[in-house]
Picture (tube, rainbow, N blue to C red):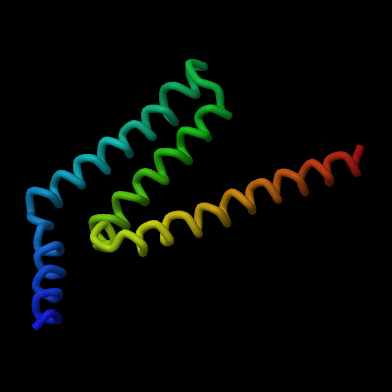
Length: 113
């Protein structure tokens, strides 16, 4: 009987994704994408923002969009451990590889001089 109760509770959590919530997440994602386009097409070309800061903001906004997609459309918001691992593990690898590529690029640049 506890299995049925557990299954019902699990179904209730996923049933909370109503059309209203889906549209809410859609508008959030659209807003984040709009901000990214404004940064790319207005702020950086006009010199309001530097390329380095723009890149950091792109990465942060993209990770925020990834969170929303994974959390709501892949239903991992309802599975806390899965969400944590699906965000932290790839992010850790990405940060590691970016640092590694910067180190290697600096090494090759210094060899050529």
